[in-house]
Length: 444
Ligand SMILES: [Zn+2]
Image (cartoon, rainbow, N blue to C red; front, side, top):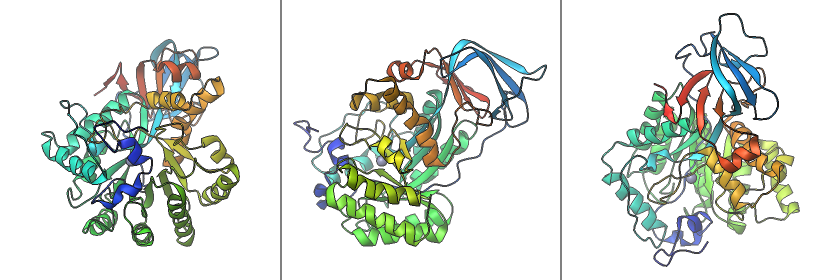
């Protein structure tokens, strides 16, 4: 990435592993662990929700292709049975039905979504980015909970069914980020499955007071996951940070989701440390590593060495597909059984004016940056956002098959590859059999 002339360090190149810059002062990163997704409410208006009611989405085309069918939803799930007489009917008018998507990595606590435009200032290092994070937070007139709710509900209207949401945990905020996300999650529990990560953006070891806050968040069950951030490059305490966050996760039965931007040997050393501790503490299927820019640099043999261990331990990964060089080799990793989810990362926060919490658009961006062309390759982008994210969150695939959660979008489309390119408007968003958004607005 070429930094702009006014900004010696861009968000992208920081995330790309400019961890050497970390010497200055504070933060940049986060992590968390899997916890239970919020429960789902029952049917709001009898739309095949968990109250046992049945609804038929008549005349729809699963995945856009093939013949029109009547999709029967019963008790929040796709039913393989014919619709009973008298079931409620929603006319699909030949529209396509596609699984709704998962945002496997997002920071709703930092966003200014829905607020006035923010003019960002140049920043010359991580410490300055973090200082601007805090400044922006203090300048906002809406509460963190309100801003997070605005962004998360917008994501629902764009067809997001679940998200792993990182909240900064640092003395500058205490646990306000976590509490804000919990409040937003509660308000959206009928529409969105949310896992919360307590993310030590300001470092675990380098910022005193953080360890105690992380411990409290995990002990009280306020977070599902504990995060970490570049133990070597940023925190400059490679062993100590991992010992601390794994210790907290182990003591309180939460998962881990660690931001790892460090590249080269420093990144690989951190990854080895994560693998060792996951094995030692028997935390199989409870650990995620986010970004992992050190992996795409490896040749196939080296990747295989890590892939085998990650797969064996159920350590999942997330990518936000920021560039062709930094997106994870999802297909190769899948050969080793490694789950990879796709995410938005920060959205209209102090780090970046970009982002929209639309996972259809994010799948599009992944295809764009990786320069894909073939239908199979475009479909892979969609699948990363649909199934990859579900695997990371431990949710069943919303693949429209009998028994799958009735989480889907209704839209005008021909087929999945075309959807990835065109990102058509989502006319209906259905979650657990309930229509939760229509024409871009939440159904209240
Ligand atoms: Zn992040």
